[in-house]
Each structure stands twice: as C-alpha cells, then as structure tokens.
Length: 125
Image (cartoon, rainbow, N blue to C red; front, side, top):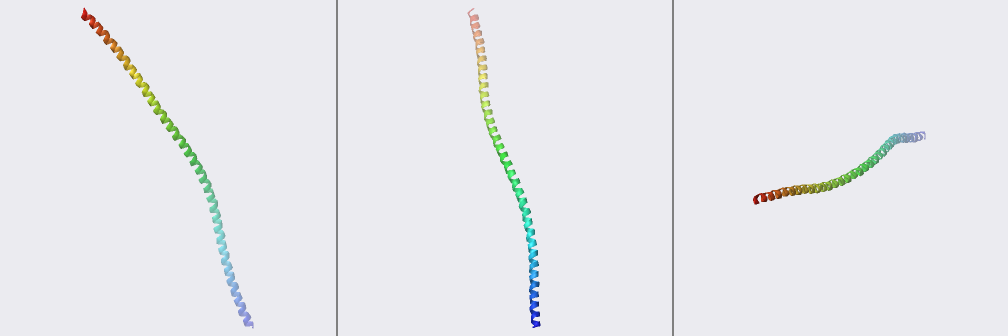
C-alpha cells in the first residue's frame, strides 16, 4: 500500500511539476503579451499624433489650394483687363495716327492747291 501511495504521490508530483512548467510558460507568454500590448499602445499614440499632423497638413494644403485658385482667378481677370486695354489702346492710337495722317494730308493738299492757284495765276500772266 505504501508503494501504491508513493507511486500515486509521484504521479501527482509529476503532474504538479508539469503544471508548474505550464504555469511558468503561461507567465512568460503573458509577459510577452503585455510587452506587445505596451508596444501597440505606443504605436497607437504615435499613429494618433501622425493623424493629427496629417489633418493639419491637409488643412494647410486646402488653404494653399484656395489661395492658388484665387490667384489664378486674379491672373485671368488681369489678363482679360490687359487684353481689353491693349485693344482699346490700339484703337486710340490708330485713331490718332489716322487723324495725324488726315491732318497732314489736308495741309499738304492745301499747299498743293495754293501752288496750283499760284501756278495758274503765273500762267495767265
């Protein structure tokens, strides 16, 4: 009987040893899992910071795009004004050149007429 109890006790001891090993392995696994969870928490905090930076960057990009759009509109309006001013200026200068040529032509015609009159007068004498 003693032998039987000893065998039974040895089997119980073996099971306890096996259980202790399993518990130690679970503790190691739990510690690793805890470390992984901590790393995930750190990663999550970094990710949240990156998201905040991305949002700020996106807002800045949107502001810059709006500014660029406003600048493009302003440039287009300026170009249109410039084209109108060039056309208006060309019209004014063309009128002035035409008036100048007409005035010079009138003056020259008057001179020619006076010379013809004088020439006819001299021919009649």
